[in-house]
Image (cartoon, rainbow, N blue to C red; front, side, top):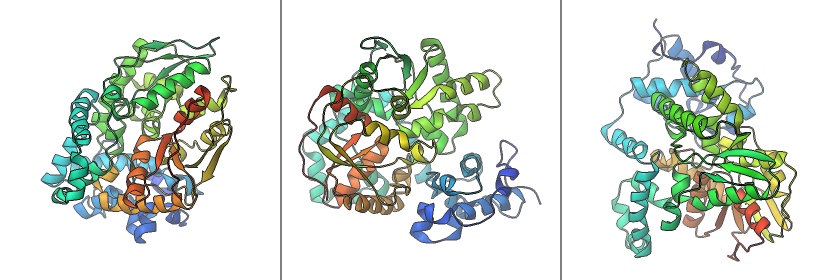
Length: 440
């Protein structure tokens, strides 16, 4: 029988054979934890891939759903004692599904909205202006209290639920192309601005720049950098992701070719950038350049952890729950470094969250396209966070922070959320983070 996959980068049979079906992945997999179904577990999905490779399974809508419901959190990769590369298998299967399975019109239109908007900061700024009006004129509160939101499709309600507070100043702030180090220069680094990050989380980028310069880093910020392609790559839009990766490489090769590292403060972007060599492995013009760029990429926590702190830290008397972003802890294997960096802050009490390895439900665009499942996982995460008695939540990924804040608010316990680098910045500058009520 003929394989169900086409000839362009099908899943590797050797990687499939690495799975011995031991079951260690089951308690680590969010969808299996929720539903207990074998076909919605990593080993079950690998069995589907094996069947498709051998021609026993067709890429039908029901089969595609098992891969659509996968969060791509890679907790199974961390849990697997056999070293199964489920990330590579999922990364090869999703583009096959996108090429071969016809989605419904509503699904296609919604995905087109997301991918036609989120990777483009200029388009996001136009939307930010409208959302600012929606928030500042009290329309959001009215829509929620009046029940008008219930009239929207579920996916649009999910998008509204995770909307961050809008700052027009932040949305329209352009980062300088270069910021000198304070004192003697220790490193010269490039900085990824991100797409959603630079419009809706400019404060995180500003804090990142301040921390880096205070620690002796000259920061180079290529103005021409665009989307890194992470959202498309995680969703199986391989060609779109590759095209954006090439443009991103061109920007950094032109304007930041001699940096020691490229610093990333968004876990989802970081995991994709570190895979550029694999993404562009067949491109003779870009393969070597892609791997060279990937080798320079570091999460902000990785860079800070390997540098002896130079800037003085002031006390931050706050109890926080640290949430491990999946694309940082599982996809990149970065877990100790954020905790090491937070430990340099005097009087900061960092609490561990139960079930830390289980995804919060954000997972790129997952909480928008699969809102029911995402809400269940978000509520589970919020409940676990509340048991810590922390006053605030800290993570290294903006999507996670939005998801967790939304679910805590839904539970009636709104909480402060911070990117890890914002706490470091507050400690270096000696500024107060506020005194909101705790979330216990």
